[in-house]
Length: 378
Image 1 (cartoon, rainbow, N blue to C red):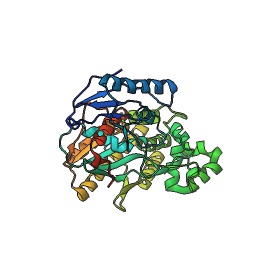
Image 2: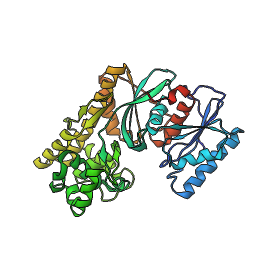
Image 3: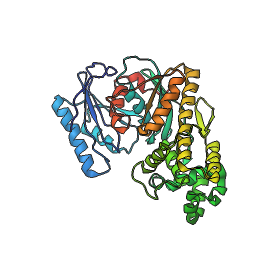
Image 4: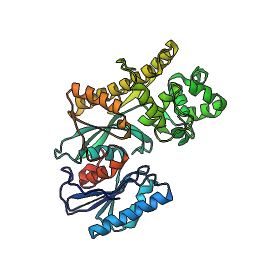
C-alpha cells in the first residue's frame, strides 16, 4: 500500500525522478517525482517470491501513476540484493549503487535543508561494505559533497556465515575467542559449552576465516553478549536475542559501564573488546544479576558512541549527529546515547517521517541519487 506523498526539505524540487529500491529484509521502495516522495509499505523479506512479486508490481505501479519511467534507479551496493531486481524493470534509467549505511545516514538528512557535514552513527544487523566485508556498526561523515567511514565497532568472525545470525551462541564463542584465543572453548560459559561438540571445526574457522566472514555488526555483538549471559535462544527470529538483552537491561538502573577501548589508525578507529569481555566474565563470576550486566553493556555501547562522535568532531569539526539503523530502535541504547551526545554539545539530526530502520533506506538512496557529488567516498 502506498503511503501519503510528502515533501522533505532535504529533497529539493528537481526535474529528475528517482526510483529507490531500498533493502532486502524490509522491502520498501519510493519514487521521487516533481518534489514529492511517494513511498510504499513494507513488502517483507524479498527472498520470498511472493514478497518480491508484490515489490516489483508496486515499483511498476508507482511509476505508472507518475506517468513516466524514472530517470535514475538507486539501489543497494550489494550485487545480490533482491531489491535490485526493480532496476531491471527500467533499463533506460541511470543506476546508482548506494552503500547501505551511507543510505541510513542520508535518510536522516532528508528533512534537513542545511548542507553541512554530519556524523552518522549507523548500527544495525548487516550491510554490504565498500571493502567487501559485512558492515553493521559504522561511524560515517556525510555531506552533499561526499562521505567516508571514520570508525566502527570491532570486527568479529561469523563462524558458519549466515548461521551465526540465526544461532547467537556462534557469535558468543567468536567474541570470547577474539579476546581469549583457544581458551574460549574451555570457559565455563554457555557459548563455550554449546561449541564444545564442534571445537575442531570452529577453531579452524576462527583461526583461518574459512566459512567465517568478518563483520562489524552491532546486531551480532548484541547476539554475542546475550549468548555469554545465557539469555539468547538456540535459534532466533530477527533480533530476538537483542530484544531480550534490552528487556533485561531496562530492569536495572545501574550506572556503571563496561569499558570499550578505541584503537585509532589510518583515519579510522575501531573498538577493542578485551575490557568488555573481561568485565563480563568478572561480573558473571561475582554472581551479578543478568539485568545489571545487560545494563552495563548498554551503557558501555552508548559511551562508545559518544566517544566516537567526539573523535570525529576533533578531526573534522562536525557538530551534528544522526543515530540511525535498526539497532537504535532499542530505546534504552538510543536514549542513553542521545543523552551523552547532548552533554558533549552535539546537535541531534533526525527526520520523524522516515523510519530509522531499513524501511527508510529508500529515502536515503534518493537523497544520495539527487546529489552526484555525494556518491563519492572520501
